[in-house]
Image (tube, rainbow, N blue to C red; front, top):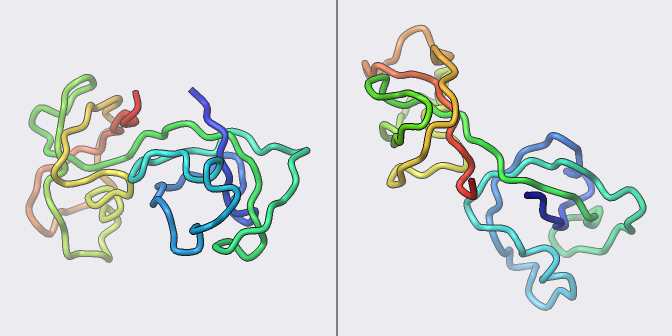
Length: 149
């Protein structure tokens, strides 16, 4: 289900994904708080539409102002233990990884997913982006269903 929110004009592109981080210091006293702070903190979203006829509103956080966009909860690509990784099952992330230069790092430590939570696997995507896991983990790339699904 789509929701209307406000986002910085420089970020307002259809298809862009982001993790909502919640209120910023600059939000205090803003007249648009209710329209802007209406998403679930820590959840990943995808912009599905930009309101073309909406005006750009001034914002203390975004230098070029904000505009109205439509967003939907987005899935999270993640690497999980291969054992038991199938569509419909639940899985957790394997744990943090210090190897930030690894091509799989964004999937082992994905934005929008926490290590202490369990997620439903929407789709099994297959082999992870790396050739070899430096932590010797047997991983499979999956897509976690959005938290709101």
